[in-house]
Image 1 (spheres, helix red, strand yellow):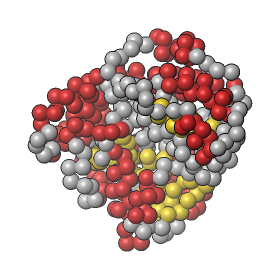
Image 2: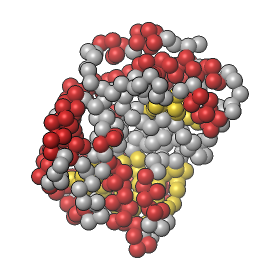
Image 3: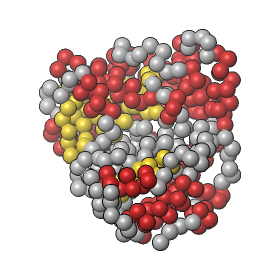
Length: 366
């Protein structure tokens, strides 16, 4: 079974119903198809492109603090908070690094799910903080009960990726709230919401209301995913003002560049593009999920711009075989070495994947 580009477009109802928005990045014909880094193929928005071009005349100057404060104020207003609750970083990766430094130095230990986004663990290990990995549950969701039990008096920071990367699964609202309210009495919890804007599930909720309630919680977000500004590196933390100030002491000065700030400000106001991006990504995600399941593969219900599915063969060999066909797919995520994380591409890229996949699966791994 294979799906042609025409079939893919026909099956994607949202793709047919929405107008094409010009300006998103086009792949050169000799470049590999990138289905491995959870990037947004429908971005950046034209408003962001325009803002970047207009900002080029300012790039001979150091980025003044007023621009960053403007973006922090916009984010705070959107969340119903004060600007003092918001800390910008060079992508959410820097936010995680700031938190690791703030809580992992001087012997602080860190608890994290496993597998999950590696940014926190890598940052913690770089300062020789001890990291405790808690395996996922059998349904591939975070095991919050086990993470609670693993949080001893020496643990200073707990990392919760929601939705989780690489599985795409979510922590349901009630369970996460109960976990956060209990565990935050003992230490700080960082909830990574990099894919927050892409979730449409009645039992999901951001942890920002817990920050508003004064809990010992940090929420990290990014402009890399739904807004498609991965290369411009803009992320932010939302936390109680005292926690936010503690993070700021470990922020790299002027780490968020001028072009990224201008693009983020423009993107945050572009509701039309946000709707387009979310709808297109969801349509392609739903279609590839149905296709993979139709081929007999188990697929974890995803709330992100990628899917995690049971490949049934060693991922390293599959990676190499797909790369030989010009398609890059996700890296190994131990212990799930016969599973694959597949990022969502545009319609043409996903149609090409569905053409190549059966051919690769019918031949031995190399």
